[in-house]
Length: 116
Image 1 (cartoon, one colour):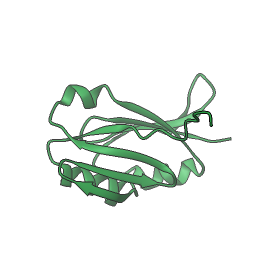
Image 2 (cartoon, helix red, strand yellow):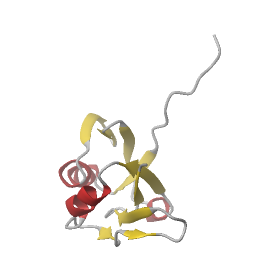
Image 3 (cartoon, helix red, strand yellow):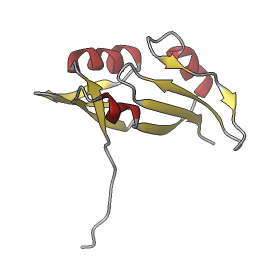
Image 4 (cartoon, rainbow, N blue to C red):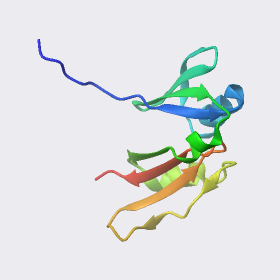
């Protein structure tokens, strides 16, 4: 049988406190914890999964970014607008896509855009 890739689960730097990061991703961003062991945890929302890794190296987080396509972009923007994070404006970009970005407390950047 031929090899077939099925999915990718990026590792996210969680910052120095994994529990605080879990609170942000679960209570704030609506993910659910799949597993947790030691300095790592798995989170998932609607089939989008990440592995959180406790890491105090801010440089790693500041250089991590993820673009996530969603349905209901306007509702998600309202949901995230009051989070303790840097949430940019929801706007049409010059490349023809409506999107907004969110920078988590750890420094990780998420870009959310509307799926067609």
